[in-house]
Image (cartoon, rainbow, N blue to C red; front, side, top):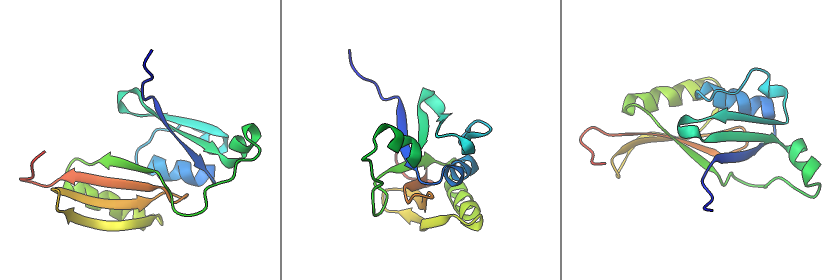
Length: 134
């Protein structure tokens, strides 16, 4: 048997804030997810994004402590084109979320920006620049 990649799991310090953040980016969490200790949003290709509250994690692993410092996880979201990188970034920052890096044209041929979710995890937005290779 060979294990296959199935899900991305993250711990949320504030489930409602995390669900609102990811919903605004288009993740389809079920109604009432804000009130649950564990929630999942199905992603294209059958993968899932799973969020667990800190309380839920402690109920299974009482000695668990949240990481102190910056997030170590980053999700990368492909945008349709460079203008979508800019508009999604501006929408999220305008809604009060923290922008990590403002949109810029990266030397590797992509329009790139970075947001931080409520727990400090990176969410990168990117799109290929016109004329850039694959």
